[in-house]
Image 1 (tube, rainbow, N blue to C red):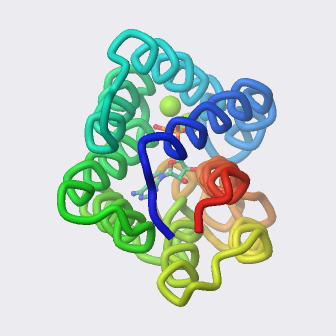
Image 2: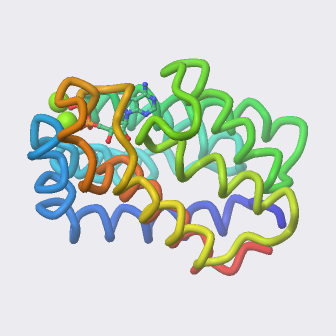
Image 3: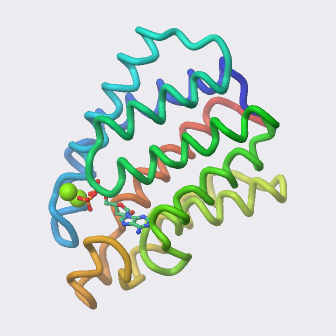
Length: 194
Ligand code: ADP
Ligand code: MG
Ligand code: MG
């Protein structure tokens, strides 16, 4: 289980395509429990990642992860831009020491939690990242882990982020950031990283 420059570029190209294709759906998920912009926010980031990777042509994993992080931070806006951006920035830092996937994903999760101070059960992207990290560390990351983590956010009540403003009314809706994180890890699995 290791990231390389090549599989990371494939991973993000896949993610960027899915985000563009699911833009309307992600913003729709963000409508009843947020401000309806999650898909549009991420689609700006996806386009920015594609443009930055084309322009800068990173020649190692650390540079690629850093370029991705910068595109996310500068173009996504909203809570998710800072959170995804921090995740990739922490992965970039850790990649100077190791390319092992569980360690890189754990660093990404730690960055998200440091930045957003959410723990599991609060109906955020952490509810997908945390079980994915745990499964990766156990060598048991598969699509079922990702799908179950995403679906589990439906019955949670949000206590962080915009969705927390609607209180109990957040129950019964998937968390948009959990769904987009699900796409991120689905695309990672598709690249065959192991
Ligand atoms: P905004 O809420 O600023 O409009 P987005 O709609 O792009 O930003 O992203 C919303 C998503 O961000 C949520 O669905 C949730 O997954 C995630 N999120 C929000 N706040 C936090 C937090 N404190 N920690 C982790 N994830 C969070
Ligand atoms: Mg939003
Ligand atoms: Mg917003």
